Length: 311
Image (tube, rainbow, N blue to C red; front, side, top):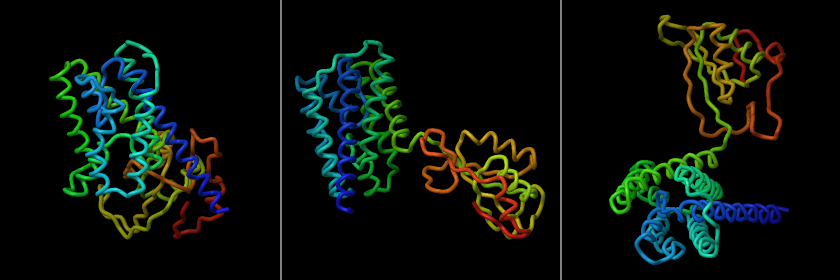
């Protein structure tokens, strides 16, 4: 049974990688390449070289990726690198044999939809443990060797690339290419991190028990009560300054803030982004699965005076 599940998981993984390669190739062949637009990273280098040499991008892309693969071989796991090499080779093969017609000549549409398809492909590939562009590998390698931020490395790399594009081709092409890069990056974030956006709240209030009951009854969200010994703030010193901590869908944030303001408009609130969350009581709006909410009666069932409760 375990072997069957492993085979099923691997099959699903490689099917998704294959679909990622197809999406990226559509973005390149149907939008960017016919119109001379660039993306960031190694793909952008390959397109730029192809503008000046009579060589197809399907040949340039694997060759341009070699230095990045070498850096990745010294930094990343062998499994990730093997999958990445195979993915880039698969993309090169599909680009070589794919014969999509250019969808449009409208530059804004090219930048936006080319970036969407390319970003969806790269994001889906990353989610399945591989890469279609070596600039991410370069970022990881330099971060490992010199401690430089990965985002800064990739930004600097692409700044140089788009600067060269503006100098050798035109400023207009460079600007549209930057727009493509921005769209690609946003779509990668959506694919990799998911469309459900969650935030965390930490709330300190003198009306904490009323807040706990209201948040449970009116919003149905789970929470954890952190026991605080004391605190200092605008109201002076507070003893037993319990802190309410909860995670909720960003769509519900306005409602929760209204509940808090109605009970204690001077409550101290810390709001922060949540990159990943699993389990618990979380309302989902884009999932087919049923959202989890708490019963309004749970407060009366579980709450005891002077004892914190969690959700």
